[in-house]
Amino acid sequence: MEAGPGAPLGVILDKHVGLGSLGLLTALLGGVSFVLAMRKSGVPVTPGEHLPFRDVLAGLHRTAWRWRWAGSATACLPPA
Image (cartoon, rainbow, N blue to C red; front, side, top):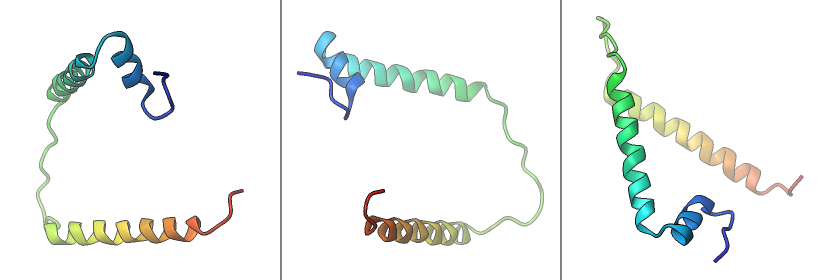
């Protein structure tokens, strides 16, 4: 099996070390990320009025629709 463009690192690890190495690498990366995140200092809470969660979700929804429409508009264009 050759390493294709889809997942070359996973294919190489599976071919040379075995499928279990993918799970081990994933767990190791997650553990290292967790340790690095725990070393960061906390963010202080600032007093004042907070934005309601529904307003945050509404803003995300509007942004997602903008990206969707931008993607569908450019999908109809011929390749450059």
